[in-house]
Amino acid sequence: MAKQDYDALAKDIITNVGGKENVDKVIHCITRLRFYLKDEKKADSAAISDLDGVAGAVYNSQLGQYQVVIGQAVEDVYDKVIDQLGDDVVDAEATEAAVEATGGATGGSNKPKGFFGTIKYGFQLLIGTITGSMMPVIGLLAASGILKGFLTLFTFNLGWIDESSTTYQIINTMGDSTFYFLPILVGYTAAKQLKSDPIIVAAIAGVLVHPTMVDLGAQTSKNFTEFLGVTMNATFLGLPIHIPSYTYSIFPIIFAAWLARPVGNWFKKVLPLSLRSIFQPLFTLFIVSMVVLVVVGPVITLISSGLAVFINWIVTLNQAIAGLLIGGLYQVLVIFGLHWMVVPLISNDIAQTGHSVLNGLINFTMIAQGAGALAVWAKSKITNIKSLALAGALSGFAGVTEPAMYGINLKYGRVFWMANIGGAVGGLIAGLFKVDMFGFTGSWIGFPSFFSKTDPNNIWYFVIAGVVTTVVSFVAVYFWGFKDSDVQAAKEAEQKNVFKDAVQ
Image 1 (cartoon, rainbow, N blue to C red):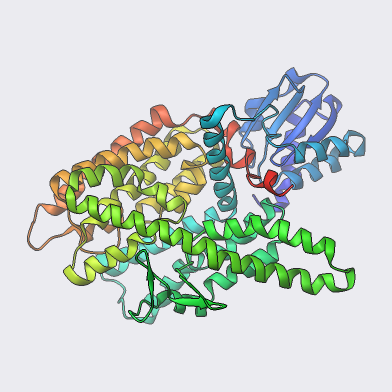
Image 2: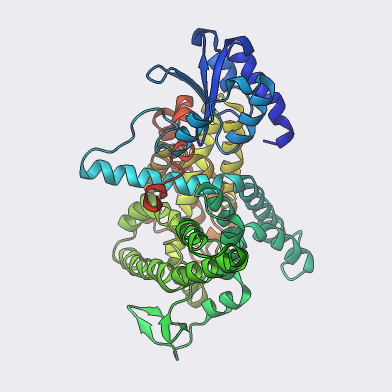
């Protein structure tokens, strides 16, 4: 939502909560405007929920608050509301308490009960932090995904653009830019959520995607030592480490955004004021970058390597079972960046044999997530949700699932899992038909990758499995995965300070 629209939005919200005369006090938490109204029955929840920039509205009887879900822009909208209502409605202490309170956005107690409750709660918080960090760049991701999809269509399907031309290279760079520098973009937004310094975290992300680091990550010479199948392609202060590719990744930089807060705050306390402006960012940049490069990145790579070996073993053992498991669970790996060790397996398969069964199975997980977002678009009556869902669906069908995943499917968790059911069914069918893939480009736009010189039916098997994936995912999400009331309890908005308790 453009910043110039906040005045109009604030005015519409005030009107629909019963007007200025119906407002006693207004505070806000990390995602919601909280009105203390003289008569809550005068508020029109349906009208407020339909406003562009509002994700829902609800009256919390326990707190006596009428809550309007805004999300990232809540402080900006709050400021405009106060401008129009006057300082008499301000309660600074209550606002500060609401912002600091864990689970304050829901107005209730979110404390988990029992071991499994704690695990579930922690996972929800983690997913909320990831999706919240991604939300500001979803539009860019969707646009980039659609652009890359059209480029693939015009180049490899229709032959309108020569792959070796500079035109292709320039447009491809436009499509790749957001993904290549994704750690920097997400680092900035995650830092704003987790109360770190956004500029320092963006600089740390710059370390991860610097050309030197990219070159180090590409080194796979046999001259390097290996640990559990992972190449130690660099050393840091004499310690052998593995440098993976951090482009397209988000989890390491979100971790960095969390760690930068306590590290930066500690140096802020101990450094003299005259030295703080230089040495606080210096030490924070060095320490956090070191931890990510020496610990977090290699650990993720090690886990990914083990998963890659297991996935390859399953595919070799039984393609149908592999399709079921990969179709249902592969996108979980994508959330945490654990899928990157699978990519070399696919590259190696295509380089040596010209095809990849594994890539063919993964393809249906992309279709599933796109179909899940499409179902949300078809069912929702909330304008901004429909717009976001349609962009995510188009991008997913063009082979880029991030907009669908982080903009809609994970944010409203059942969408993600219902879509995965379709991916599992489609993967199972693809495995039973022994579908093969002869290129990298996947999802619906990648259909040319399924034309086989030896099996003319391969393309039809792809179409059958793809249609089943789309239908099952769509139906499962439409009937059991999403309803507009879910917007009022969006995980991203309510749980974005997942690491807060660890640093306070």
